[in-house]
Image (cartoon, rainbow, N blue to C red; front, side, top):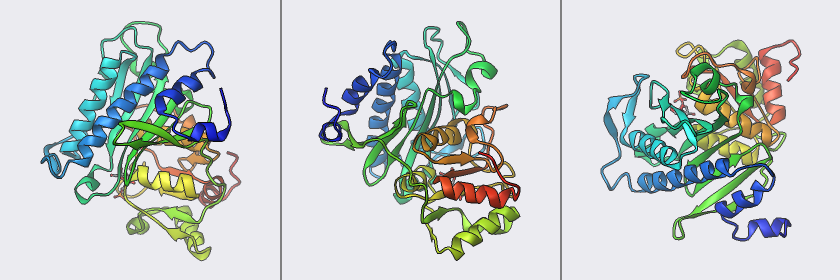
Length: 336
Ligand code: P6P
């Protein structure tokens, strides 16, 4: 097959790309490929729901709160159901941990080799004001050989055990960006054809960047190292860009260069973002693209979870910017 860049960028669909790339895993039995297709299918369905939310009276609040006491939006609930259903029907997954579900969902599928951690719709408070939202997912192989998946062993694996990770950005166009550990590739959805096409082959994060993303309204709650780093960003005339939707901020910084920070705050001493289904996936992607992801002390991918929904501070993006932030946070030299 022609592997020249042009060959990849002219009209190659996600399905074809997955098949092509499966060659990278000669012993692959095709289950991970099928799982990626199942996720893409659910993304197409959620994309359709988000695009018509305002019209189909599925915008706005669902009228219940999730297990964290956060008010659920109707689309949160719909996206959660759609991804769980697609993964259950696909047959490759034995268990799911979802932001929208307090407990692990055991799909009663003992032949499923994979575990998925997912935030079905992040940033859903932005839906009603038509700001981009996203899905974030991590994929692991189960560690226990058979039977009911074991929470500590199969579900709460450290991020470096991921076999794949990605996100869907429902924005001005809908994109699927994922890695299986061999680089990062981006696909843009063509609504009229119902297909994702390769649009961003082999994404690399610029080592430097001119953008920093943080909620400045919380400045009074930051630790001194964050205050000094953000002050440095301002003296170096970086641009402040903060959408309030993690996937949108992450994606822009990945392509253009930049750093996103959600540090420890008084309200959220461990940060606001979740380790298992937000930070780990984006950390895998950014490292595959040449960037860094840290909680301020440790590499995100090295953190061993001890609860399903645990939060973590997150500094993620261009290598040199994250490194600069870490030096400010831990004045002692940081080896990362
Ligand atoms: P804040 C959305 O609720 C979210 O989880 C991320 O998508 C976003 O970056 C962050 O929280 C915004 O949080 O506290 O700045 O409103």
